[in-house]
Length: 278
Image 1 (cartoon, rainbow, N blue to C red):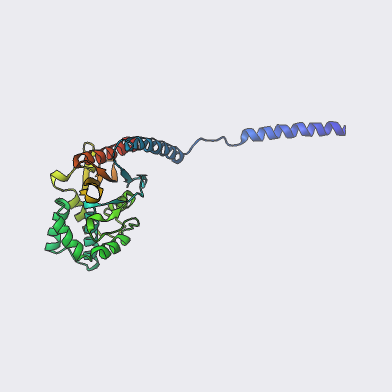
Image 2 (spheres, rainbow, N blue to C red; image 1 turned 45 degrees about the horizontal axis):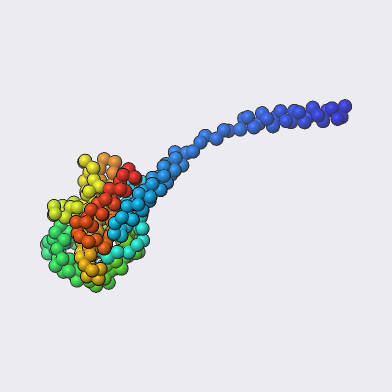
């Protein structure tokens, strides 16, 4: 009897275990966040492959995209350093605005005139004047630290400042960050100037715009004497639309011609949009 009772208990226990397992919650599948992360990873992998394939056919470039809506950043060779040429003028502008803010004043008429020429026309004399006024390389470097730029080395010859696309999209994000060091008036002025560049200089980032998008841009171009007079071609800016708010930076060098370099940076920007679908 004892043996039989033990068998009955074992059967009952087995039945209860089975019932318990059936009552356990069933897996509900991936969360929306997990699905989004998986989709993003797939996009990034495909974009990495597309840019790697393209990079094998053209002179060296790097590209970064920072999406303000999602906070996500994509970089291709993001920490590679390049000489800025005229995209350094955005750093000079940000430093000018910060310096005026520190003194609780607006830009003077002269400063505003120089800033307009520097950004809209890429005027070098205006830049040299502001660069000197702001304390040259040490002065700009101090401003860069406040802006969170950790991979930029300012040169006393301002156009030879070295930077990365990661730092450039960081700078672009600070120009629109309501919690950043630049106040509303400074951010508004930076946007006004960078959205009204001379028509001959609105290449680069704007090539990735779609119908209805607005853009800001600052480009840099320089035949580099140390590279056989081959061209540095850089573009930084922002695209905004109904569902779009991204900062983009493309830095490149060693181009045989300015037009060829422009084609490369524009194509790099377009490829990021094709795959990231911003």
